[in-house]
Structure formats: C-alpha cells, structure tokens
Length: 106
Ligand code: SF4
Image (cartoon, rainbow, N blue to C red):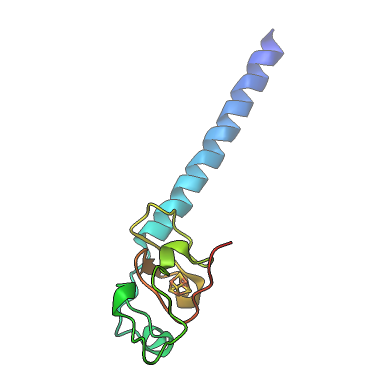
C-alpha cells in the first residue's frame, strides 16, 4: 500500500512537470515577436499580414483561400490568431497572412 502511494506521487509529479514544461514552451511561442511587413525576410517572401492584400501580379501562385492558418509551416493552432513560422525564425505570423513559401497543409 505504501509503495503504491509512493508510485502514485512520483507519477503525478512527473506528469505535472511535463505539463508545466509544455505550458512554458507554448508561452515562449506566444511571446515571440510578430513579423512585420517591413521585415527584410517578409519583403523577400512577399509576406502580407492579410493574405487578400498579396501582390497577385508578383505572386501568381497565390490562390484565394490560402493563408498561414492552412499552411504546413504554421506552428499555431488553427484557431490561434498568430503562430510561429520557421521561415521567420519562429517569429509569429498572422493566421490570415501569406508568403511565397506557402505550402498547403496536407
Ligand atoms: Fe505563412 Fe506558411 Fe509563409 Fe509561414 S511559410 S508565413 S505559415 S504562408
């Protein structure tokens, strides 16, 4: 009896530890700076915070309906307004944004 209580305590401490580590890394992402359209990488990739404002003449591959929220690189949840993107070193991009590295999420 004594040992199963001990096991229970160790297990729950372990789970709490993992949960707080996850919460911390999510928090770190949430605090990452947002990409601005003036950012040199944003300029190079044609990033727009509002996908409908993409320069369609320059980026003919853009198709209506494409945005960061349905791009395979978007690290936020579908419901997050902003999420990290590896193209911008983990800085946050808008769920409704778009850049020329867009790759439709499978
Ligand atoms: Fe958005 Fe995808 Fe471009 Fe990142 S790579 S900015 S998620 S379209």
